[in-house]
Length: 337
Figure 1: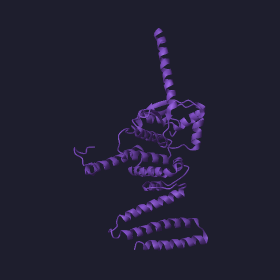
Figure 2: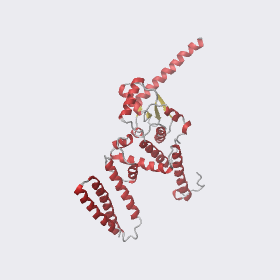
Figure 3: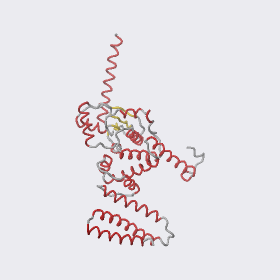
Figure 4: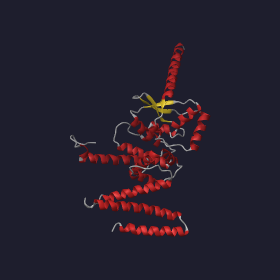
């Protein structure tokens, strides 16, 4: 009995120390934009439901953080929406640490963590799978990915509240080594196949998802809100159009599905033109070819716009636009003669 009495103050002291430590961490929690942006956004109705649940029952599941020892910062890696609700209403929340080595491995962990959730939309899943493949293509060490269904984080996610939340020889010739090139290609292929199997997709779909993720991120450079709208389902855009933007050097600020579609068609035309340009016969013919290539691009863009105008026109105006389209088609055909 006396021994038990001696243990009680020790346990209470340890508990008080942990509470004090958690309170200090909560005051130092940092949110990195580049990590927060990896989390698919909640639509207004979902956020309001989450807020109502927390206000009624409190924040039950711990928010996960990573201690960035280089900067001595406690960085939030999961629970951004719950954190927003709790800080807005002055509510307490539990914390739990995860172990990752640096910012890049934190990103890897977050992507895998989000892919383990069940409430992802089609767009969100495609984007995250694309990010995962693009991250692996960078061929770096660190976090190695999920352990599948036996991963404790996967099991943890199933009970979480709604919250978006090779051998290369002894002497290598570097990048020009045929064996190195073969291994790199094989690694990419293996990555696509493994990620495809984990997410019930085909390897081809994984590579398309990679282009989708790149295109969406480029689209967001000039208009960050457009990415949120697309991933939340508020703005419906064809997957192929976003994929086409992945090869664009620069994309202007776009607001609507129609603007994105027009820009995507322009990117596709430019891609086809590059292929044609690669077959130039001689250096002497280059200026003439460049002029003709420019004319072809302009003509193809005009044809696309003309078709759109015909769709939107009626009566005499539709007939007039159709005649313009016929004339442009004849000019377009002559450019190849």
